[in-house]
Image (cartoon, rainbow, N blue to C red; front, side):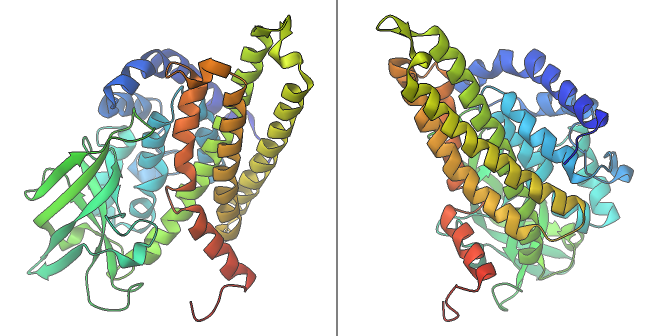
Length: 384
């Protein structure tokens, strides 16, 4: 896809913002295992960065998906994975269904302040025992007068400890598993909503992740996104945006891993010459660069399909699967060339190694991507 001067202006704005207002604080946020999302998001809202593809009437820019893709890739300039993940959650994971399926009143109440950065959003889909198997969730929302009463819990909720609202997927009937769910906006200060615990993770330390509990949480039915019973389908649509965001961000992160490894091995000396001068090292980095270039090509093919209004599910799935595997190969291969410094918590390559591992798990594990692709290929067993 040919990038325009407008795309490049967005990239420049993001790079300046990251260099001046994010990276100087990343080490502090990593140590605290949380970053000030409201503060960061309000600043991003001022810069117009939280609603690139969102409706103009809600304060968004109404641009096509290529701008969101460029932002996802460029956010890899941040010296950790947790802050980009939380930003991507706000723009491309928790709010797309609200933006495209929510009523005007619902968008005015929740999407507009999410675009300005006044509100932090989170997404409640996964549960203990129901990770990638979304159809098996147990959280329920029963009708009582004009309200829903929600009971259950959610797991691995990014930004869950500081969010203002959560888009919750819940069972609203006893029907078929793919037709009995609805997406419902739940303000986090509603009585009965609680953070059961803040989760301690292998990586993504600067991003707070929560286990949430809903105990007879009452919200008006007008907080439902779109039609009742269509929540699973809306979430599947939302997943495609999320998975492509993850693939693009990982392509950027893998590229940064290679770039910083080239710089480090060029300066690091062993046995009288730089590490980079060893044929195995520069050949291996060339192989890894080839993999990253292929990943970028797949990602941007999916972006072109989305911009053209075509169904990008298959290509986005390929990109998500490839991203997780490329990220693991690149992070591990690059870390090896850092020697002992690659095992130190202070090294950026170490952080990439930890943070990038999530890609093959979050937003649908590799095995789910393989299942989806098998169905497209017509090889998935019909009895399964």
